Image (tube, rainbow, N blue to C red; front, side):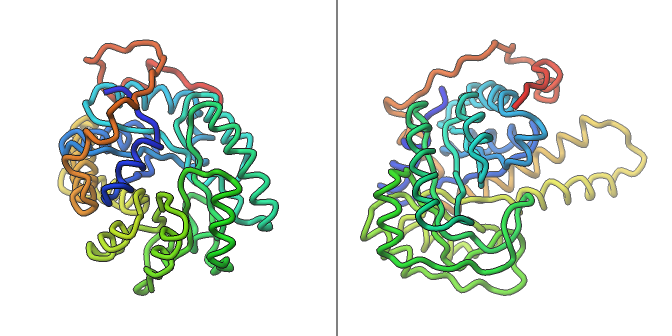
Amino acid sequence: MPVVSMQSILADAFAHRYGVAAFNVFNDLTLDAVLEAAAQTNSPVIVQVSVKTVKQIGAGLLQLMFAELANRRPIPATLHLDHCPDFAVAQACLEAGWNSVLFDASNLSYDENVRQTTEMVTLAHRYGAAVEGELEPVKGVEDDHGSDEEGAIVTLEQAVQFMRLTGIDSFAPAIGTAHGVYTSAPTINYARVAEIVAAQPLPIVLHGGTGLSDTQFQQLIALGCAKVNISTALKITYADSYRTYLSAHPSEYNPLKLLDAVRADVVAMAKSYMQIFGSVGRAAGPTRGSSIAMVFSPIPSSTPTCLLLTRCGVNSM
């Protein structure tokens, strides 16, 4: 299935009130695993990447890896840059063929955020890509981005004005969630989500999803949270799986068996979230008339995922 636009994925999810999982991947194994989970559940999926990972691997190579692996599976998938305050990095990803960016100017003044986000929207839409906007920083640090301090909450009127002035495709408000592992139960502001959607019907993005209950996820999705970010849970699953396998097989030195075990655990984790979010069996919705032609050097379908990095080479950002 060709890659589809972020707009088509979120439009269907928002209209039918299910959530699409957006997993922060950081290598070929995690990228392949979340796509496989989507294929096994017939779910749309959002593959997202941190700025730190882009700088380490390269925007071009990440897009090439994504396009190759996504086009092997009959499900709608899209590639998104998470929390990017750097215009140049976001532009590099758009030029490399990425489908969406979160341009995060939440540390700037309201007026400057509007100005820079509007500029990013203009650029991204030229590429057929989407922009996620953010006004208030989400509490917590993730991939070296963010703060443990609570940010100021803007008024409903300011939030609606921001969405309308900038032309963003989705909006990530602060609603009481936080990046990382919760040290105490979060207080979720459901009313704020409902008020924003009622005033400006635009797909809402839920950050800081790891640690919420199934009921909390489902209530927020029913209110309009169409994109649900999962990062910490993936990292925990990945690291714990390595530890568990190595502890159980202390005298084994077969790296492919180790990687297969880790991949299987990541697939299972991703499938569990797709079930909770209600995206299982929803692959047909975002695919109608919305595919994007991805241009890349063909790689035989028999090529093992672990050889993609070697075959592709490292592209500059």
